[in-house]
Length: 397
Image (cartoon, rainbow, N blue to C red; front, side, top):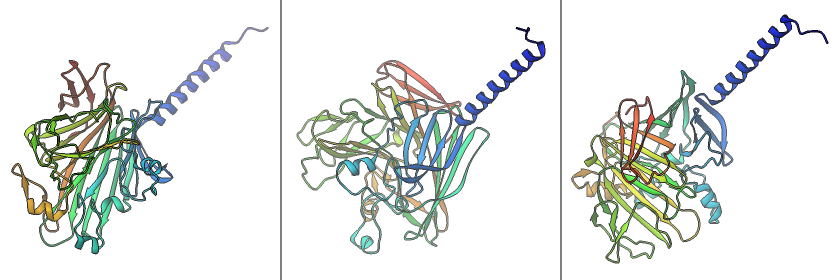
């Protein structure tokens, strides 16, 4: 056999280097910040906003954040409530609206009056029942950005939302605006209907924590057996008063039995920003939100724990304490001295923003004691275990 020439060796080494560079480039491009407008979810059109850490699925119908998963999670566990699956498993027609996962209730949060219903209005506002138009969907400079808008014809408003996600981060930023097309000031109600669900939400395991707040149970007029909490009673989170005269720890779902309850939380005592998290300590996975209290002073938790089937828990931050008809909210006006709506000035707009994160936590994490946005990172602390972690982010509120 003839000796291999130096020319042949040089070319082989060169080709190997080129192959490695091409492979690295393909991996980098595949995992870089991206917006895919041709995706699908549950046989519906979908848009995926992604980076090297997470994938967020957004549906044009109703605009919900339907799914968020870690790129390197083989299970692809989505912590958000899968109401499509819930409809199928309970034998109901699969919903055709955007009331899935985390959706936006604007302008309206709760049921409507008889007169509003007769005029064609439905609960939780118009936005989650209409198609959202894509204004722009692009990725550049390591950042993926999706801008959508929806016209609300019955309310004469325009809602616009921008989602941005940067490479290397488990944190995404959402900025929204609500514009009035009417020539007079009006009270507006707006809630981010963030909802977690099974299998991430597990009985006696998944725990919810939140920043400093002033809490009360929802006023109730009926005595449904599913309601475990006393009606309209102030309490100190997380120990809520029960109808039976005891107290219930609201951090984790009940280990057995049925429950359907709501609690309202004034988040302003916590300062400029408030936060809420849900942790599955056994899986070591954490979802959370950080939001300005000037935009969203209230948080409603909704516990839907049927004896069988999927569970759901709302972490709904917004302008009012409970999802109630607009007339009720305006007449009540305030709770704990805090308004239950925001003013939307004539022919003007109001804005709001929040951060959402989905991440693994260190082994031994038992809950969250504090979340702070400071110096280009989210600092998350668990005083129960004495552990903490940091999530780098260039996103700011």
